[in-house]
Amino acid sequence: MHPPSLVDQYCPEPHSGAISAAVCDPHSGATITADDWGTVAITRPNERNPAFIYTMETAIYAVAMSKGGALAAVGDENGTLSVFKTWDGTEVFRDEKAGTDGQARAMRGIAFHPDGTVVAALSADGIVRVYDIQRNQRIVNWQGFAGQSIAFDARGDHLLVIDTLGQVKLLDMLTHEQLDLELVPGGVQEAMFTPDSHHVVALGGGGVTLIQLPEGRIANSFSARSSSGLLSILINPAGDRVAAVSQRSVHQFSLPGLQPVASDKHGAPDPTVASMWDWEGLAIGGEDGRFHRPGRTPSLPPIVCCTGYGHHRIAAHGDKMAVWTRGRRRRPFPARKRFVEVKVDRDGRLLCGLPDDGSGLQVFEVKSGRHLFEAGRDTANTPKMEVGGAVVATLLDRGGLRWWELKGNNVFELGWVEQFALSGGGTWLGVITPKGHVRVLDPATGEDAIPPPEPISDVPVALVSFVNRRPDMLVLDEDGVLSVYDLSVSVTEERPAIGEDVLDLNVPVDRLWGITGGRHAAVRFQEPEQGTATVIFVDLEKGDVVSEVPNLLPYAWVDPETGSILQPARGGAILEMDMYGNEVSVLRSLPELHWVTYGPKGVIDASDGAPL
Image 1 (cartoon, rainbow, N blue to C red):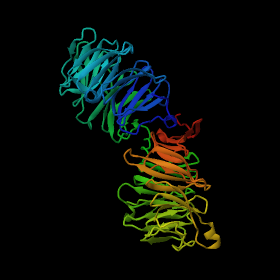
Image 2 (image 1 turned 180 degrees about the horizontal axis):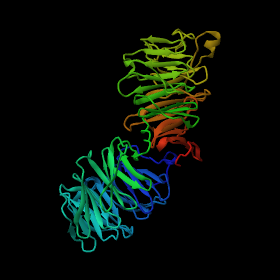
Image 3 (image 1 turned 45 degrees about the horizontal axis):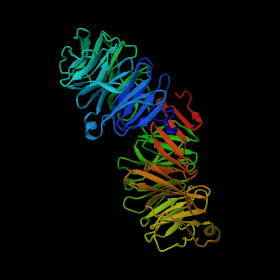
């Protein structure tokens, strides 16, 4: 385990996959959480954000925290059990099996002995294994158990388990005997001791059951007939309340009386069985990778896509659009749709988004969030859209190009266009003809703005892009050769520009950018087998590759103004990297509508009262 990277810092919600496991140590407040993508986050005592975030090879459904928060344990779907020191991330114990033997014992529950030297684990093969982590040896095995929980009592004398019939049992650590408790009608799937170990609270299909110890008799129960289906139970740090989490609500009961105290909507749209009760209150894990707290303003959903140009950054959080300007976030506005791609113009005035519901391109005014128009259903599957100045342009599903020149309230369409590019200020529209030649149009008229550039070779052009804030144009032909045109001669002397080759890239490029200053270009190509993308930066003067940044998301975006690489990151963040792949800043949306921008030296800006 390593200290967190820049993107992991100031990250109270580090998960992208569904929350699959969560535990809070009531004595210290330390927590460990995990998701079904294999991300694990450990927050140390008295700290707000995770100190360590790392990713396992598979989903995690079993975690535990020792009394006092000094140790954290993780059990994965490959049957590996690991124990870490929370103060520095050092692994102090590991037990694993390879291949199918490991997968057969996928971990379902973990518990620390109160003294922190012994760990018990429940696996999918029905075996309870107990380890002495100081001596690095297994103490004992018990067979024939199921459910989703395991726990030591306050003294560490007994293990609380559930057998394959859904009945609660105690395992005596000294004699290794199995002790029966009163049968719970319908059986249970989860059980835990109250902090004083005088009672067991169990969750089953029929509701919540309270069992008194040492007699092992049912003392009280609560029927869940009117509930929307109970998922899990939690006991608060003070030990005087238990909460039962359903699909929509959280029902609280007193302990040991098990009398109803309160019921609240928890706000998790799709809750999981993994929740926790820390010193801030109840935190309900969701399929969206977030923890939801009753009575709190819901967090923004995870980022689906993002983009940026100059001082402006846009993040699509489901159907909410977050606009960032110079590192400060405005209040998100509702976009009515969920977008899979968004674009913003250089001046931050117009935003266009491609919905995921099959409807056409949507265009908004950035400052107000006002919806301006829908581009039509024949833009629903557009492979490319751009916005610049007062112009919005998009390829059509059936082929061809349509664009809107908003100053003159005009709409143009050319059915023969194969590909296109819009200059940053919306002054020029570069289009590729069916023969693979390039023309530069005036978006206000649809006519040639300058004489068509001279073709460099007989090879058709595949992609075109303008260099931001310069009269230069980049083209990439079907053989992967990158070339550049200086269009100033066409503007001043009205004669065709003559281009020159820069570099033979020889890779299937799907995106091309010209960076401000005219020194560099960036190209993106996909790595289908890895499910990632790579961005290459080219020195246009020397004709050399400056850098290659691999392992990016397939839709990573390059800001034509700065050359920064932008992509979504965990915890509702936009990650910004330089052309060498170094993390330079993170723009993160926090719970309760707060936000923070930070870099390698710490916080750059944040909303008032942001929980840092």
